[in-house]
Length: 140
Image 1 (tube, rainbow, N blue to C red):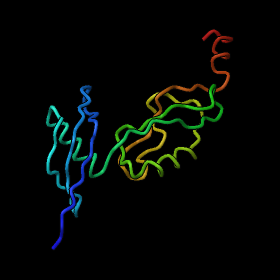
Image 2 (cartoon, rainbow, N blue to C red; image 1 turned 180 degrees about the vertical axis):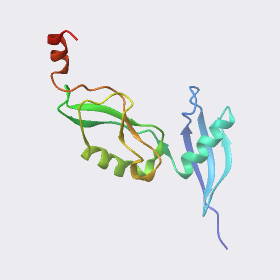
Image 3 (tube, rainbow, N blue to C red; image 1 turned 90 degrees about the vertical axis):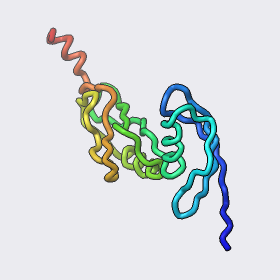
Image 4 (cartoon, helix red, strand yellow; image 1 turned 90 degrees about the horizontal axis):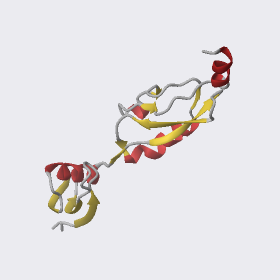
């Protein structure tokens, strides 16, 4: 006879600004079955808990090296959340990535990283070295 092991977890929902503190009791067998929740003030909290227990997602926020840029690094982020279980591999790829200046905010730096359907995009513009000085000298 198989005994069922119930697990408890406290999760802070980040779906909306309320930040509900949700208590969840679930069974982690072949499929995760949520037995009871409390603390969520809307249905979105329940969906968040299901996702967070089964396969948590996070937005990647970091920076990449910029060659010949007016600054050496550019901030980047994922355009949508990626599975937390892939975060280490994604960061390894981003850490090895170097881009050539100029780059514009919104440029895709890495397309479909690890086949997640997620792109890594620039969140700031980095001009080429001396672009600002050259622009001032030429009066452009």
